[in-house]
Image 1 (tube, one colour):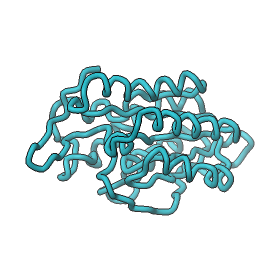
Image 2 (spheres, one colour):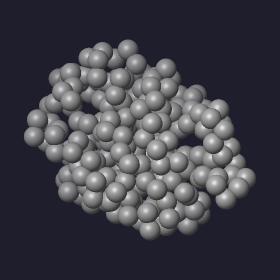
Image 3 (cartoon, one colour):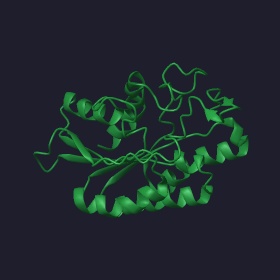
Length: 227
């Protein structure tokens, strides 16, 4: 998919509508994992762990308005017994997620893990192989712990070059295929691909509250398949 959503402010080197780069470099707004949704009441109950960055951590939003919180509401509305644990941290990378995941799996014992990481790797110019290896490791670790995995794909702005952009987008699909995991190709489809910033906050990086239902709509069909 060709994206025209990005442009660069050459004076501030600031990205606008930057769907892939989920948090400004240096942000580390750490919050404890939050559980939402319907508490498990039977052997069929699900426990969904979301491991992400600012796109999932409600950066700049009022509490309870992000797509992860909306997921809890959707599960309740569809009468699917599940708890959603949001273990997302603004500014996190795949390396950070990899370092945190083991303890989270032990603590929460999720049935499903959603991994929404990788944007900050690109922002920091980390090697693609490192990002791919970290995603692969996290996916395998979650699967070995008995959880089904959903990977959330990201994309980079065109100034990174066509080749880099294509390889970055493809690594999520590559990991998903190799590990037999589910995949959402691009979390910000319908948010960051119309060439405007209308669905972004004043920082022109983080989606507004009204964008989060769209983000959930991108996630829900693939998640529902593995619930």
